Image (cartoon, rainbow, N blue to C red; front, side, top):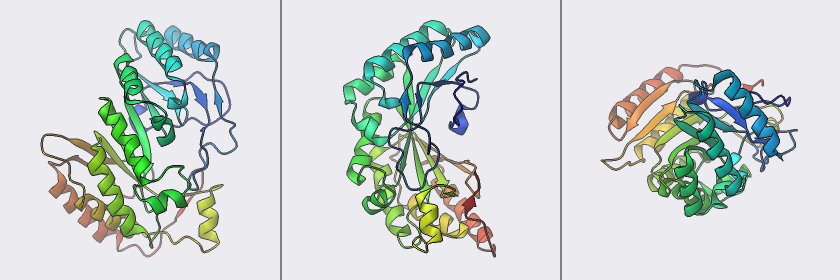
Length: 297
């Protein structure tokens, strides 16, 4: 369910397929990551109260009793002032009697602008899940892809969310450091996950998008991507070093369109089985003689 008429792409996690997509910003406030072209050419804008209210009114008209989940779009709704977010959350609670969850993407710099107390207020008001594109815990890789934070800040952003009581879905990108940085990326990312202890973890595979700087680097011979089997070897090293304590659980998924293999597990319980699945994936993907590293979108 989506009611914003502005002609720009809408992106959402796979798990938000049945949600009311409420656009509160357009574009991405950072919009400088070298691997991403999602919002290139889209001027960043915070929508007015009137524009947001119009979308909510339409959703009430067409599905007041049907809306159970709301996803705040676009790329970093958390950039909104806390007071404005709290007002939106209050209206959503008032207008949708069957509302169960509100979620959004969250960029690291936007999280770090919020105190733990602000995040706790947002959680208590109904924003209970954030999707955090950490991508990597490695300093050198974060700098190379122009993420805007270093490893320590990337970890602190995730830790701050989990400390507030929100659920946190961390997204990492396999292959983002290329062949040369693969081991460093896998180990640093595992260390970051061990500190953050997210409730959800998603591993995407790097795709080279038209219009991204990373694609230009590849075509100029300055970036050496991993093979599909290499991506799975990187995931294996990462998973071998992730240590979720007993008594906690983390839902792991690799069900994005970029993934060569669909994997699912609950950590730490399913870790041995997941590693066996990864080994089978490596054996299967090692047989590939060629593959397409481009994304044509």
